[in-house]
Image (cartoon, rainbow, N blue to C red; front, side, top):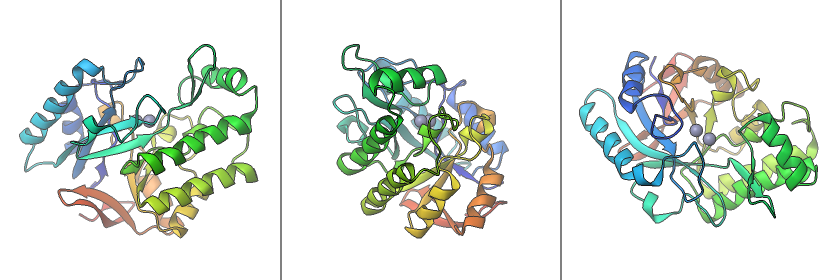
Length: 285
Ligand SMILES: [Zn+2]
Ligand SMILES: [Zn+2]
C-alpha cells in the first residue's frame, strides 16, 4: 500500500541488515517515499549508534542507494539525533547536510558520581535502576527530566521531526505512574505547546505496538487528540530495525488517526515536508 516511512535503522547502527534490503522490502510493500535515520554518531560510546569513523561511509552508502533507486523510490538521507546536553544535539554543524533529521530523547539525567545516564528505552531493569539511583526513586522527577529535555531540544536545537515523544511510557508499563495522572498530562501538554510554537512535526511511531511493548503507538491517543487540536503536522513512521518492520501496524495506526480526526500525513519531497490525504489504505501521493 502507498505509505512513506522516514525512521529506519540499518546495520550502520543497531538495525539488522544492509540498507538496500530495506529499500527492496519497502518497494515490495508499496512504500512510495523513504528515508534512513540511523542513530547519529556521538562522542559518548553506546552500542546502538553509528561509530564516528563510519559516518562518512554511511552518508556515501545511502547516497549511492538513492542514485541506484532513482525513478523507483525516492530515498532520503537522515539521522535520528539524540539530545544530550554537552554531548550532542540536532544542531551539530556536521548534521546540517542531511535531507532531514529526527530529534529523540533516549537518555535522562546523568548519575552525578558514576557518569551513566538514565536509559529510557533499554531494559526495564536499567529504567528502574536510573529512577532509583539518579532521581532518588522519585518518578515525577524522572519523567519531568525526560520532557524537560525534549522541550529544551525543541527550543535550542529544533529537529524537523520529534521522535517517539512519549517513549518514557514503554518501560513504565503502568508500574510507576499512570498516563491519566494530571502531572503527567501537563508535562505532555507543555511539550506539545513548545513543539507547536517551534513549527516542527511530530512522528507517530508504531514500534512499541508491533514489538508488543506498548498498547498504543507513540504518542498515546490522548496526546494525539491534543496534537490535532493544536494543528501540529504529523508523520507516520515505524522505527524499523529489520526490513520486515517497515510498514508494521501502519493500517491500524492510520485507522486510529482518522478516527481522532486527522486528515493528512506529511511526506518528505525535494521541496520539503508536504501534507497529503490518507486513509487506512495508505497515503494519496
Ligand atoms: Zn529512538
Ligand atoms: Zn529509532
